[in-house]
Image 1 (cartoon, rainbow, N blue to C red):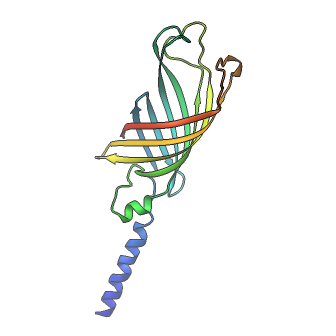
Image 2 (cartoon, one colour):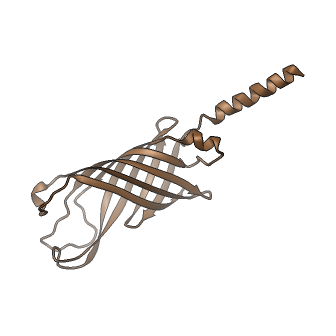
Image 3 (cartoon, one colour):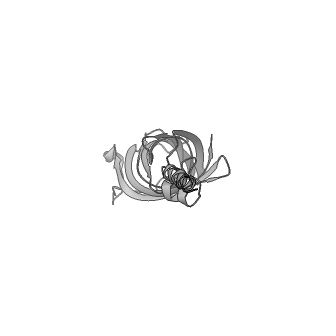
Length: 187
């Protein structure tokens, strides 16, 4: 009887150790939409808790007022690379919560480039300035059902404008804010 109990305890110990070795997925694809835009993304596994997110999207802007002279709507392409550290996967597994589709809390460094390409129309005297931003971000990602996701994040970082001579703002700031709430579909 004692060898049987010892084998049972060892078996459960091995399963417990294996369960604590939660991991991000090898690769996951999806699309997301938020208040101002639509994005397609891929997350590729770099380690058990780190994934590299690559993203192509269209960010939208609604504008109007004296500066531009008319109201309008434009979309601007965005290219993003973002290493994400999912720091609570083991805790989620221990609490019997989902980690599939990289569901968990994360810290990341979101690096986004906006080229000076505009889909829509601006007045002749108004230009869109290409930029790159690097924003440390905290966020959460959760799955609903088999394919649907939601994600939210917040961060403050740095933005660099490539054509500084085109900026007409008196108080230029090099701070960038990443505040997002997105709904998505995972393939």
